[in-house]
Length: 318
Ligand code: ADP
Ligand code: MG
Image (cartoon, rainbow, N blue to C red; front, side):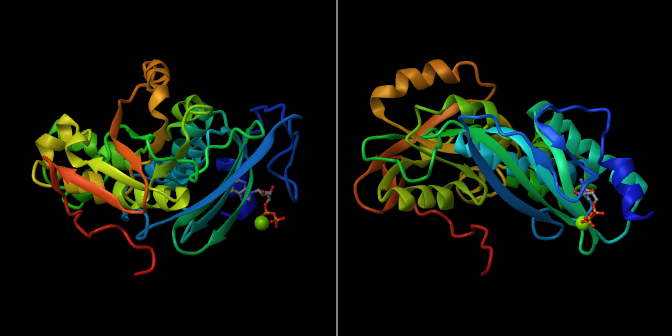
């Protein structure tokens, strides 16, 4: 299959109209209309087999993931998604794989309101690089640097579920209960918290999405803000599935497992009521883990005693 046929068959969807796209897939570059009064927000993330996901996972999950990790970055800025490009690397063009990859990619794209406007297709190690474009009003961006002592530290969802699911995929041949199957879904189909990120505009003082692990990413948030944190591992929102499937490692998973794509953010103490009102409509819980403090140390405690975080965080270049 040549590149043109592949793109026409799986990626260009001429029937779908997005009035903001003047020229989409098929020309040398895409041309889009930017609405006046908005800033453009851009992020790019790569997902490669063996590095970011294990070989053999469903192709729909690869397509979903390639876009989801990028949408999660837009969510963490409080931005609204608009357009994306997809640079796809394939060792060979297998029709069934491509069909399922595209189905996973477009299912998430369509419900997130983002249009695929171009890309590239190359022979190489299996993986994809997606670039997303989004928008927000000037001054709305939720950066990592705005946390101040006295702010509460909050997280969405159940960090640690994804790594437990990922670990269990290694023994995928074995029979799995409902709890393990749900954890696997959490790893295979991470949900970018776009609506929640938008709701936090004008309320959160700092935010990022948790991709490398809660402890590591909290460190990044505090370093960027020039502050420290007092946090309680006893407050971690461990789900029933985690407690059931991996009772011994649920806390360690929550602190050091990656791939959660939950939002970690800070909110001034006097605005917690407002957070409660906005979060009441969310499909995920939101939990306060502790407080921003002066200094630069991130201190975890459990049952009133200092808690040492196990050192198993994913390192990009160790
Ligand atoms: P060029 O040689 O100019 O880079 P290509 O033949 O690579 O052009 O691409 C043709 C068109 O298809 C371009 O509009 C490009 O953006 C788009 N495209 C290529 N690969 C993909 C892909 N995997 N997904 C979406 N669009 C793609
Ligand atoms: Mg090209």
